Structure formats: C-alpha cells, structure tokens
Length: 301
Image (tube, rainbow, N blue to C red; front, side, top):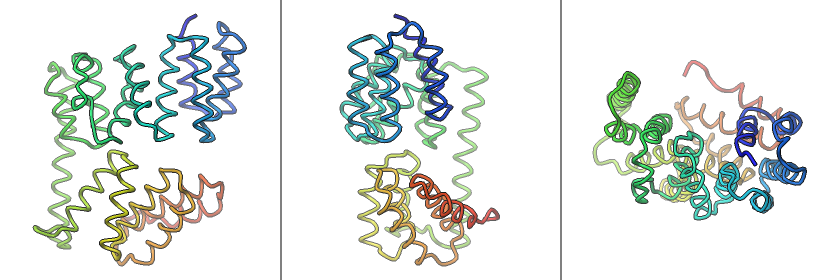
C-alpha cells in the first residue's frame, strides 16, 4: 500500500472545503480499500465539525488497515491537538516527523503542540531531529512566520550559509528592528511603555502568547490579567480571543463585545476586536453579524 497517494489527499484537504475534497480526493485513493477510504474521509469530516473524539477513533481504525501511514499519525496529532490532549498529540506528531523530518507541515504541527505546552524540540531533547538540516531550515521559517524572531535566528546559526539563509536572516533582523522602532515610537508619543510599569510586562507576555498561538496558556494568563486590571480592554480582547480559539464561542462573543465599551482612542485594538468578532460570528454561522463587524474595521489605522 502506497502512503504517498494519501499524501495527495492531505494537501487537497488543506486547500479545499470538505464537500469538494471528498468528491475529488477519491480519485487519488484507488489503491485503498473502500473501507479505508470511507473511514478516512469520515475521520476528516468529524474533525472538520470539531467532533475530535470520533475523528481520533476513525483514524485509529484506519491505522488497523495501514499501520505505517504517516498521514494517519499526522491527522491523529492534529485531532488530539484540537482536543487538547497534548501528550497524545505530541506522540503522534513526533512519529510522523521522524518518518519524514523534511516535511514542513508535520514540523509546523509539532511546533504548535509543543508551544502550547510551553516547550520546544530543543527543550524536549529531540536531538536526532535537530541534526537534520532540512528540518532546521523549515524550523527557522516556521519561527519567523510565528514572529518568534530570536528563536528563528538561533536556528539559522546552525545552518550552512546560503543565499536563502542570508536573505531570511536579513528579513528577521529587519522585523526585529521594526519592532524596536515601534516600541520607541509608542514610548515617545503615548508613554504606554515605561520602565517599571507592571502592566506592560503582562501585555508583552500576552502578546507573545498570541504570536505563538498558545491559546490554552493565553486563556489562563489573560483571565488573570483581566481580573487584576479590569479596566484594560486589551486583556479582555486577549481573553475573548482565547475563548474563541478554545471553542467557547458564546462566551468569547460576550467578552469581546464587552471590551468595546472600555476602549478610548485605540483604533488598532478596536480593529483587532472587530476582526475577532467577525471571525467568531462566521464560525457561529451568523454571516450578517460577521459582515457587520468586518465593515467596522478602519483600514486607515
């Protein structure tokens, strides 16, 4: 049985809606039994509607038919990650990554799983993986996209010099310099960032969790911050957004809409809340409200 034909299906999954993928992807699964195909597609469907326990069981059923298929380990990792069963997610993610260390999407999933637990490949001691140059190249790109610039530079230090790595280093250093300039501008114009202000340290930590997409930790820390600083709408935004990402949509809407009442002359934060509410109402199927908040975004901010 050739697992690469299922790999084609996986990339189809990334780029298309489920109804379209189910009809077209069957063309690529001719080598698989009807039982495998039906079980695999049902697993994708259940994962798509957030029925993660059922999706996990269906992917495990597929493994009974094709135990060596790394796509199944990948899908199990993603389903467990969504289900917040991080130990199992890590186990399946690492299994898939060890099968194909150069696979960008396997690595991206493992990085997200470990980030949610406040860890990393290096911290977990996966030294055999970190000796793979293709994996390191992908890792530097993933950290860059997640705005984890210092970690991206650290990984680049372990890579051979090339035109690509030089260009990536330049872009990372430009991003770091741009962030520093923004902080200096804020300090000069508003005084929001100031030495010894405890709120700023909490904000910086929460912004880091947002950039890392560490939504479980984000929910915990932003809730504490909101309780400590109840008049700070940024903490309400972060908490509401974390609720959304942790599948607590109704409560997320309530918190985010409440945060709007506390905003005074902060168009950027207001836009972030509008964007989050638009995404939330889209997830809830209320496209009218989603469009309403989308239209409120001020493009000149």
